[in-house]
Length: 404
Image (cartoon, rainbow, N blue to C red):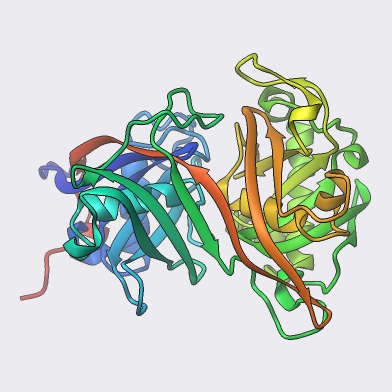
């Protein structure tokens, strides 16, 4: 029987956008968990409380949803002209698995405030009052994020009047710029931003049929399909999808076959080991609907409707990285997202999601027969919920003593 005292690890529990996660400085982790691998994964799973066959995360910091089962590791920048490295782990709920294959766009909003609060920037870069731009290297996907963080009295301003649908209380606005968010190749199709070389594809899914799809890698790899093609209106809320096991199985099959088509996995059976990416989302033209909080949204308030699934369930709002994919695809005529928004050029769109609406923008250009995207922009907010010493039962996998 293990009766050793629990490990005490400095940590910060933060909300970023519509997600929550446990933030660590790399140097504060046990030595064995400071490197990628099984020790790190074991520690983060124990922090969150996974795997939990009850699906509750009662014995951990997780919230038993894809939006709240997240860990972040912040370290000194490994790339010139950046302030910090940001590494994100999506912890599975009922299986022993941490997915490192993508970014969390929502928690990206909390990285800048964390870095400022922990003195990870040159003090001369932090104004007494104003906006501090934090240059973040997103280590999972090798991309740059600029976070424009409000500062008052030399400290991060957390409280404000910016309202974000999907978050109950207002807070201070943080503007995020995702620089060169798409994976862009050299061929005429735009390379791996559109992995198949096409703006739309016919995606064959056994037992479901052939679906028109846009397969895009911008922000996060995403499979976009038309809501009407799978029998939906595009204004569905969480319960409609998440209470329907047959629907969830259908979406997972679409996701798996899309992942194979995008070259992310070799066979559909490999999808179980890559749960965080790609995302699958369905789109529809604007429509009147009622959000999960009971708020009425008129069709005229949106350019299109989007619903997206994360870790096998319909998201309660919208993943930040998927919002980048939406902005990028909406800006490119011919994609299913762009057509749902009415076609033509859309430097920015406001889309409806289960909790309300969100405006996102992307700078897309068509040069020499190929599409490029310089950046995508959105506003989020972030707040520290708790800070102190996280307690974790000791395990030889991640708490082995340092070598003498």
